[in-house]
Image (cartoon, rainbow, N blue to C red):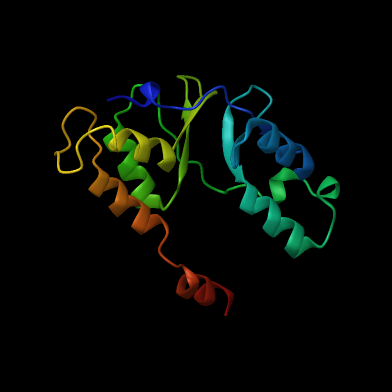
Length: 162
């Protein structure tokens, strides 16, 4: 099964020089927890999550209107294309411990988002004991990916900040 068959769309976006309250408002209006950050050409350059916004407000001690998206957005962008397989995207999520991946067109513009929620929903459409047949994603592979993504990083973080 391909990403385009399950991705969420349309995609709300923001720019790196937008204040954080704009990104938060777009998440609220779109009922999502992440938006791609795009450049002037509309190409994705980063992602920002609701958690990124909260942590920026906490660590910088300023109102969201006074903090730019660039100070809180991701430093690396992992993405996929609409024709990529769900197995490939799930492996990317597992490898990089990410819950949501922007789906980009051939020039890098966001056309959708695929999330762990999407994978969980599609995996339950097949029998729990089935192998990765029709859509390439099974309940056990989704559980394994979610377990990897959700593993505590406290040791990692403590090592970085010491």
